[in-house]
Length: 179
Length: 353
Image 1: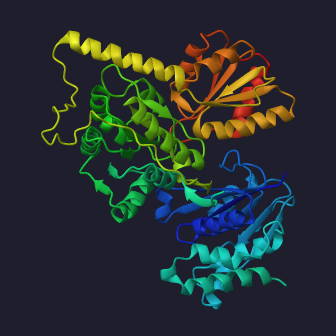
Image 2 (image 1 turned 180 degrees about the horizontal axis):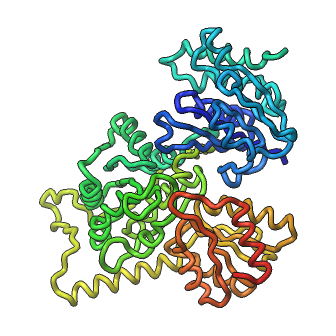
């Protein structure tokens, strides 16, 4: 049995829910079980937002993640709030252009990616989230990078077709980061 | 096999209602169920249906009453404070014996409360809410797939028994997305000779009413209605049993609490504790027989709820308090963790309830 519990957290407006949706759809296309649970409080209007995504080859029990195997932290408060909840042996992805702090735990794998900086330089200002997701996919062979175009196709509405290429570019940048 | 699609629980309710032949939706927005109204607003005009945002919850439930009297499949949806506002209409609908579907995606209370998930409207849904002797069939989905299937089932039961079916969900199941499949099927059509469809001067008038000034008549109405409720209690309880075969402890939980409880039961099993789960799917009629049977073989029950302990009373009633029942709960929008439920199981295993 393989279950991956991913907690994505940051500011409202950073595409936290969208990147979660992307991972959930990726799982759907892989034919595995998925659940996606957003925070839906007032924080959606500008405070902190978070999103629980569970990918599993068996039916998902509770959709609420208390001990994530993977944490994506898109701002300082989120990293601070959830860093200790990550399971030993888990992974933490840090947007290091927005977070100066380093993770002091040595029982987790940490990836520092200056995603917001890269996004800005590449003209992908709102897609730092997808750069990190691209890197995550590269680290998770069970999800694989293959088929991402299909997911982007599904998620980006036809009216915003231009965003498809930009999302793909962000995912590719993340995939190749640090290579 | 139909395609798996990802959908929010709230959207699944709306899509399922449309597939069940519902073409009349009356509502008023409130978090965390607004996606139902949004979905209906988008879809209904395209399929010749009615989406109407009323001026209030009171107005919308009375529109439901009117449409139900006219014999069409009709629904409304709201969240806890909004359902309180609908209580008067729910009682009138019950007193008139017309079918309707009402959705409550619960949030923390009482009062305006909060907007995070809760199960604290259990009493309101299963014991009344409005005035008078009446019942509603109360269905408690625990997944997005069930949000859809129980909505369809709810319409059928409402038409079959001329009663209100309530979907009692919570903010988590409403907001979460999971894969779901819709099988192609035609909705069952029920004859409604009592409906107000216009006589065309060819038949006597139908009357839909809840006013009976002669007490003898009103008493008979109540007795007849309770005979109908007895049949429902006999035929319609639904529940799921998980690892109950050899269990000597039984967790009882519905909706989102049952998902958390399932994780805890699986973990307890790893520790060698023989615990199982009974998940009521209908909260009224309550799965009394299943609980009573369990009471003969387990040493106690643990009721896991997102409330101060409401279903626990029905667990005690169903089991005639033959075995102790403990409560593992959070309230106000908080959800117990699997570890908290596990701790309650471990305690019960030691005989502490």
